[in-house]
Image (cartoon, rainbow, N blue to C red; front, side):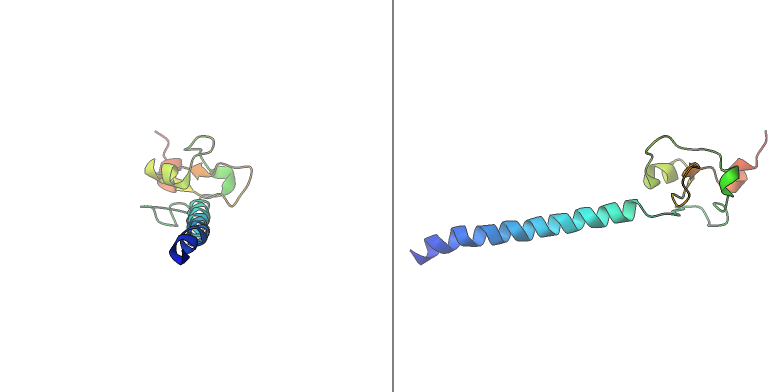
Length: 95
């Protein structure tokens, strides 16, 4: 009888633990995806574009990863300007 009672009682603890770990993973994933100033494959100097000179390189709700995959800089620290923008060497080119 004891083993029958411990099974159902231990299941909620397991579910609580799973819920906790799942929540922790989600929070960590959201925290890492919303970080500012991500320049994968680009130097910080290439992405040091003044806000007024940023040339849009993305689309609404582009993620940092999607932006970087396009070869662009991502910086969401300044509101009202493009967060996904061309690096300096591309923004300065006038072909």
